[in-house]
Every structure is written in C-alpha cells, then in structure tokens.
Length: 132
Image 1 (cartoon, rainbow, N blue to C red):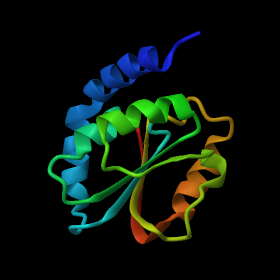
Image 2 (cartoon, helix red, strand yellow):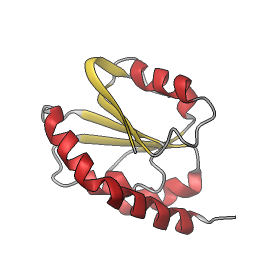
Image 3 (cartoon, helix red, strand yellow):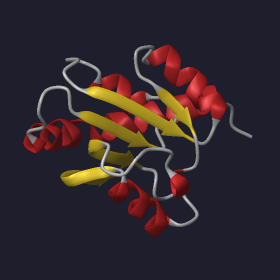
Image 4 (cartoon, helix red, strand yellow):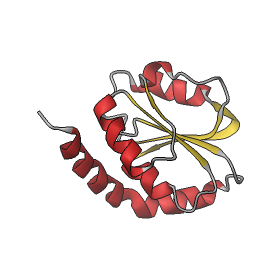
C-alpha cells in the first residue's frame, strides 16, 4: 500500500507533466484578483503549491484522504483544506470562480456526479476545468 509520501512523489511528477498546460490555461482564464479557486481531489497539494505564486487568488483544496491533506498543509500552509467527498462538496452554490481537478476523474467512483458538484459550486459564468 502506498503511503502519503509515495503519493506525494506521484502527484509532483504528474503536476510537472501538466505545468506548461496549466500555466497557459490559467493565464487565459483572466480571473479577477481575489478569485476563489478550488482544486477538487488536491491530494498532497502539488498543484496548489505551484499556483500559490503569485498570491493573487484565494486558493482552496479538497481531498477525501486526511493523510494527503496533512502533507498539503505543509506545502501550502495558507491554503484552507477540507477533508470531504467530491460527490457532495461542502460549499454553497456559486462560491468559486474556478473549480478544477487534476488527474482526479480517473479515481472517482462517479465522474459525472463529481463534475456536477464542481459545476454547482462554481458561479454562473465561472470555469470548471478537468486537467490531465
């Protein structure tokens, strides 16, 4: 069984594979300063740590595994993390300007439902992005 540290190495490698694409896409999103951004299935926070510079957005992370989130807090101590299921996101409707996931839909039991929840918590006219 893989430990959170093992997963962290995997998440960092995957984040490296998509860094150029993320940089390009996030620059095209033209999000206002102080936009709220949620990563669903954030794991150990590899992608959020990459996004935290420059700090012009309000980042949030969610994962179902507490051991992953304990590492995520170490990587991004200013980001609020929530331990919860992506199939029932604990946020109000329309709360985020951008909700995204990174290599997450491969692992979730019901990808359509997870995407529906991501859409629900994203404001009208906001962005839902599934990255891989």
